[in-house]
Image (cartoon, rainbow, N blue to C red; front, side):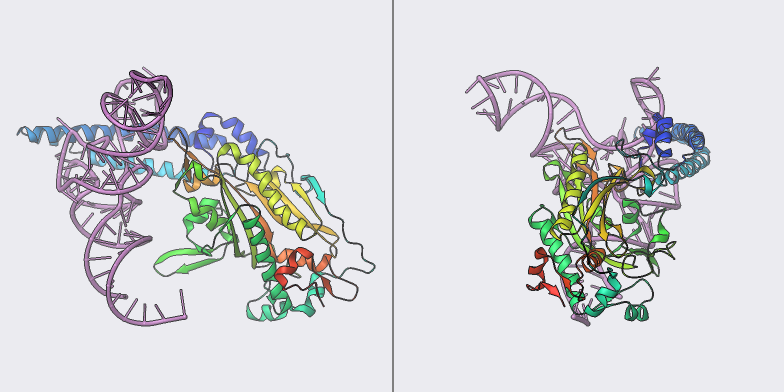
Amino acid sequence: MLDIQWLRNDLDEVTRRLATRGYSLDAEGFSRLEAERKAIQIRTQNLQAERNSSSRAIGIAKSKGEDVAPILARVADLGDELKAAETALEAVQGHLETLLAGIPNLPHPSVPVGDSEADNVEVARWGESPVMAFAPRDHVDVGEPFGLDFETASRIAGARFSLLRGPMARLHRALAQFMLDLHVSRHGYTEVYVPYLVNPAAMFGTGQLPKFEDDLFQVPRAGMERMFLIPTAEVPVTNMVREQIVARETLPLRFVAHTPCFRSEAGAYGRDTRGMIRQHQFDKVELVQMVEPEQGEDALEELTGHAEAVLQALELPYRKMLLCTRDMGFSAAKTYDLEVWLPAQGTYREISSCSHFGAFQARRMQARYRHAQGRNDLLHTLNGSGLAIGRTLVALLENFQQADGSVVLPDALRPWMGGLDRLA
RNA sequence: GGAAGCGUGGCAGAGUGGUUGAAUGCACCGGUCUUGAAAACCGGCGUGGGGAAACCCAUCGUGAGUUCGAAUCUCACCGCUUCCGCCA
């Protein structure tokens, strides 16, 4: 959520910057609503002041044993008028809040302005795509003999689910634990285990609600508040600091979590229907940081580096993309995507997305820190995949497949695979 | 599932209808003192909103209600604690 003061004080500039990411703010509508709010608020507060002073006068008069009837008569019909004013104020404030909650974050000045994926800027490239003396097969074919099973999954759950058995299940588990251990032991993150179902307030905090409800799986509960399956660990982990005031000395906070992620993928019907690229359920190791505002920029570079370290350790070729204004997510001020090379597709595909949110999420969550002068300021939040497990599995199968159908395992992973050096 | 209790500022903790945004302590900020620090003493100190300012409004888990007036009374919800039952 943007600071409403920015809109009040510098509406043109905010409108211009939002336009670069394809959001057209109804500046005139906002101004009109603001003017209305102000008028109603002044009126309401005057009535409240009148009521307060009268009530105080009654208290004083009573304590002196004087007759309060004249004052009572004076405030007799204040009540209805006040009630009407308060109702009107609530309504206009509600409108403003709804408007504000639907406005995306302002892009950071270093973000390239662009219309689509095609305008993202490649900032780095690492590794060589493997040379194969044969036509690379995709992960569905490579993985099938080792227990990658979509047919059974679809019978149990439907399309966009997968079932792993034997070596595939083992490899999947090894990847998660390898990543978790790397981030904990080498990058200074604290491992956390978090709820996979969260309440609407948490979803609002990180920006999934109210705008992207259709992307979520929802769990209704009779007579109780509905819950949502997390689409990413970002939601529960970032919300760890909601409505908290953390001590400055504890910053930066760095958390890593391995969780399943659930996405309805509404509106993606025809895309990536084959294989485990786009699933309703997938596992991910997520990095989250809460930092002081001044540290946000550096923290994004650092966090992205932590995700890159996984790809490098696994010897997977990738490139690092700086997303343009229109390709960024709703809450992000700046985002790097890491894209891994997939030989069968002959392209790079997203395997990690690392973003800096500024105070956007913290404002929605009321997450603050207490600094030296004793003041409370909003935290800045960041997160990134480190990495998506399913897509990492895909990348390994495709990049390390051999002519004989076996798959060589990268050295770094072998301790988590009981020393195994290849699937055969 | 049954029973009881509790939710107040950064923290601890008073306050049970009236000039209470809220005692007190700790923490924090400024000052005096000191070679420096500590201690002691003096002053300040929640958050959000409106206003040029004086000042005003809101806020004691959330929401509704009673009242001229609610931190305080009523109801619902949320959360936490304790005991009993059940359970991986």
